[in-house]
Image 1: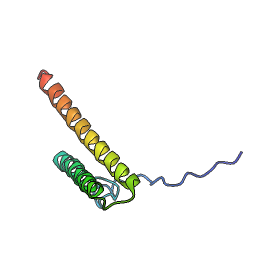
Image 2 (image 1 turned 180 degrees about the vertical axis):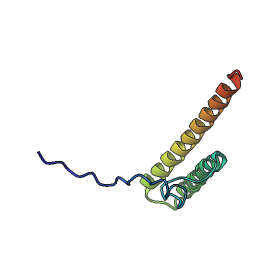
Image 3 (image 1 turned 30 degrees about the vertical axis):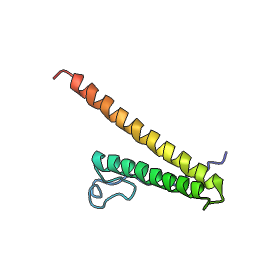
Image 4 (image 1 turned 60 degrees about the horizontal axis):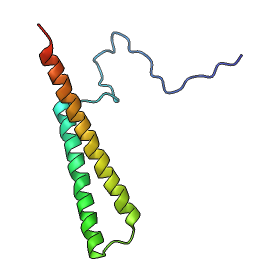
Length: 100
């Protein structure tokens, strides 16, 4: 029986290595930063979509598939942001219902 080696697994840190070097795959940033990035992404994709709509109305754009893709990106970014907001509000409400 042949055992296939697993690649992509990093070894565990020894106690002397813990805290000495920052991990490259860890995400540093607060929840507010993540929330702001999601909002900025939704706003940016909406702006691109609006610009594409103006260009289509003026006849300056020929590839409608790119416009459709940008519209879907904007819709997905907005849907993701709203989902994040709803989850944060639900978590806040759940925490507020906890008895101390």
